Length: 554
Image 1 (cartoon, rainbow, N blue to C red):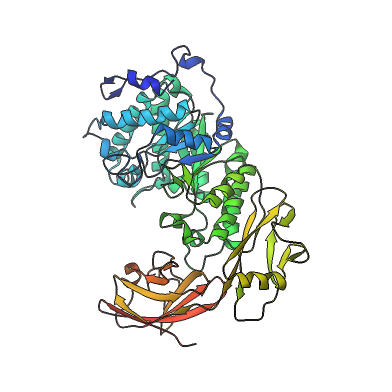
Image 2 (tube, one colour):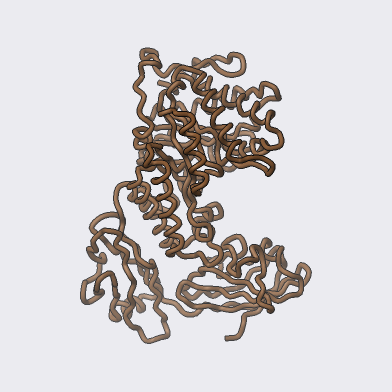
């Protein structure tokens, strides 16, 4: 097997002697899957993120544990059929003109790739953060960049020349360039040079699947058209296109009021898949979405409310499946615990993995709020069946506890009174005829109460009695109506970057990033929007490095 044969590798010249895929199977006689068949076989995929792409000394420099055979076997056992191994090469390269890859770094990569191939996974390796470290200077340093890029791919191609065909090469991650050049022409030149080098190295590389990105790995129409032109020019049946998708940006990071997976965010997703199908898939060009997720996850998966993100992933998985597009979940350590081999958010993984095979019913919300101090009345939520059929609400009696009229699910007043007497939140599973049940939580609440506070621009926390409610977003406005804080084109500030709730400690933090762009001496009116529909006002004033805050009277 490829991984076990790594011990036979010899350091020769600039790299390593190629390792045969099998001593009894010549490279030229191995069956080569079509690009479309390979893409189908690669679905679903997972990224070994923040590991070999880390820019420090080794794969653990960004906080993830050393990759083990057990991790890769665990990924396979979780249902993944491919793994993308992003690699940053900059720190492992010797000086010009050879740019020799550090033998120890290459040996370690070959070891991990070998384990994954031996487990039956497809594996994709690439040039990753080099894209913004030095490749982006191509407009002003063309020849030096191209020489370095070619040297790296020449060595990678030689090292993996006779690896199994389930090893796939991706030319460059998220290509981008400084101003001063024709970006489309520069990317086409890189992709074409990559293609020439790999194909010219022979062995298994003569027909190895090669993955080419759009500019910025964006699915914007112009970029897709440019990449389609490169495919036409190369005329190679063993090519795959790739883009990345992290959703409609305001929703993806929770800014500008985009805290719901609303019609705009939904349409952005649908339009992306339409463009991919019409421009590439319909013309015989297979597609891999090499990274997907939500950008706010880099700060914490709670940046996006649970039900809203589940609706995003449900629709994303369905669209990928009906479009015949393979997808690779971006995981920099925030999803899978790589030591325990368990998912940090099992409900999120359940929704993602279910979408590989079927649709799931969802709803307009996963929370129903019931005010403790008000007369209790029935509460309704609109179900979104997504082609499924409602079955029941687990543990409840139809008629006595809930009713269904069309897609309107109503919890009765008698049920809600009973739940209020229990004191805490109660969750139910709304079940459909297939897919993942929808978790619907009944939350007794009162209007949140914020208290006065004094602190500094580096440490300012508002005492908050949340009273069962959850924070959705915050606006920040000066007295003259202009917008305060970062991203002053919108009053709605970015969740976690500028403000963050802590339900355990009962507080809301306003971050140093927020105060760094607040005018000294100018009071800022903050309005906190909660998922119950409640809003609470507050005034924060920066005076030098001191910050004072007081609640607005209601």
